Amino acid sequence: MKYSQLFGKTQRQEPRDETSVNAKLLIRAGFISKEVSGVYNFLPLGLRVLNKISQIVREEMDAAGGQELLLSALQDKDNWQKTGRWGTFDALFKVKSRYDFEYALGPTHEEVLVPLVSQFVSSYRDLPLSLYQIQVKFRDEPRAKAGLLRGREFLMKDLYSFHCDEKDLMRYYEEMKKVYMKVFKRVGLEAVETEAAGGTFSKFSHEYQVVCESGEDEIIYCPGGDYSQNVEIAVAKEGQQCRLGHGPLKRVKTIEVGNIFPLKDKFSKVFNLNYKDKSGKDHLVMMGCYGIGISRTMGAIVEVCHDDHGIVWPSSVSPFDVHLVHIEDPGTESWAKETYNKLTKAGIEVLWDDREDVSAGEKFADADLIGIPVRIVVSKKVGEGKVEVKKRNEKKTEIVSVSALNKIVLI
Image 1 (spheres, rainbow, N blue to C red):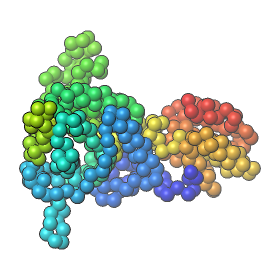
Image 2 (image 1 turned 30 degrees about the horizontal axis):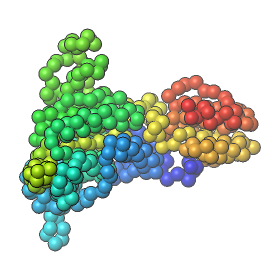
Image 3 (image 1 turned 30 degrees about the vertical axis):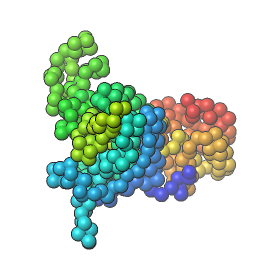
């Protein structure tokens, strides 16, 4: 991709109406554009990141037996009234049509999926079942001032599992704990699995928290990995010694990027989601719910993966693998083109800064701001057949031949 042709360019000035690091950097680097408070447009660079996060999540959900579907965002008011949440879900957007019908603009999908599943599940042979989607959600948040971390419109993965009994539900629940840790590791985040209250759903739930000073949540945890609870339910106190000898417990601010709940029969009762066992007796289906904020995860990555110059993307979710910077020296155009072609033929995704009449300093500053993991420079100073290579998270540079470039980039 040639940068000169890319829609969405870097900006020198920080947006005045943003306070969060993720919003400031993503807007300046040309990944997103603000529509209204809590709502953002994803430009080509931003969509590439969003899609890469989504694909990692999709691969892990598929591997865990999930089947992907896509549910309606415009939801039946009657089902929300059946669950009692039409009047109690504070962040619910309510849409009234010109024909006086009212709908819910989906913040979550129990009211859609459970009635749907009841049409197809009737026997123990139909269970267990796992269904998920990656879809835009809408919540009328009172405070939408944290960029992608707290939006009124956001992209989310929600998976629901359906089981014959609580034992099988908890078996799958434990499996999903491992899956979630794998997902966040793959996208470049160190998530802390944290016990939390279950609210109206259950006695407990588990959140996946990323330690970050700008986070809105707080946890008390052991860095050794054997204890973590949300401060709202924590039984231990900051500074208390870990029972396994890991030292004092810490209280830190965090960003929640995922959560899981054992819903059990809460929604099955409302919508009469039953199955018949081998003897023909009816039982309520047990359910679990597993969510990951896709766009929120993107924002969290930027909050923890940046420096004074810009974003530092983990390679797994970076919009491109390589940022090719061509210093506009006479006679070097063919060198840059050769380098670009060699990398793309090897399956390496390249953003080629081919802009004319732009200084080397400005191109380097834009490369740092955008944050692609590897920067490659073609210039007369480096020499024909050679390039300068620099990792975004390192200060050192290395001169290598174009023929040896693939090995270095793919490491």
